[in-house]
Length: 296
Image (cartoon, rainbow, N blue to C red; front, side):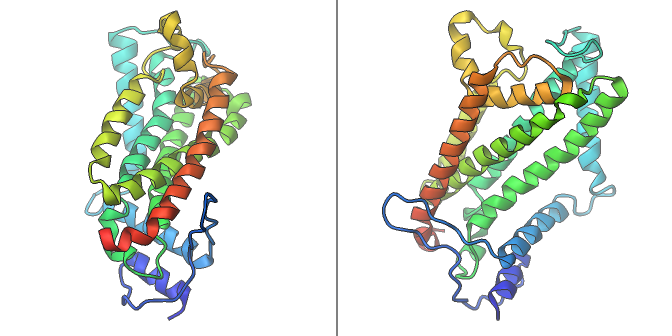
């Protein structure tokens, strides 16, 4: 069986389990980060894992993938009613046609993708022990698939949101290219965290609980449900340097033209942290990967 057929069959869950001598990833010695070889087989396996995830998510559902479009639309309607009609909360910046619900949804878009990807990546290796034990299957693909699934879900929600904004006249077309900065940095940060937590979870099964607590605190320390101008002056610098503050600010600027209230310090922090976390997560994953088979 060729490497491509072996990896793809295992991703589909139909592999015969026969070892395949394929050098998919070998950790280097010292402090260098492993350079993973990406082959066509890996890309096909990644596609199959993402496809399988979506199929299982909506298995038996009457409307299937349509729920991916209906859920964000319902969130927008619900937020608009609660924050706009009931509470009368005003948006911070942006055009006059942008209400607080839209301001809030801009922040929730990247946050929900990061939260889902990180939490699911943390158990990606331990939940797929049958695949990890196959020599022809690179376990990092499991983490990649979790990040990609969350990103696709976000893209669907973002497309629905963009249509609503365009209809309402609140979409700022001229700032949309900022997403070309925001999304790659978001993916780098999420992938790095996912690789780090997935590798640690194999040896310490409390990692997911700790990650849940940290993410809950991180959510409230990021100006998602509140404008940063509401933060007391003595704490504002800390919030501004929060990498997720820079990410949320980029999304708000790109979609509704709102003043992110964070500026370049937050964006610089996001870029720095994302790159360092990606390198660190890949290094830890590579160093611990040889012991996965004995621990899962």
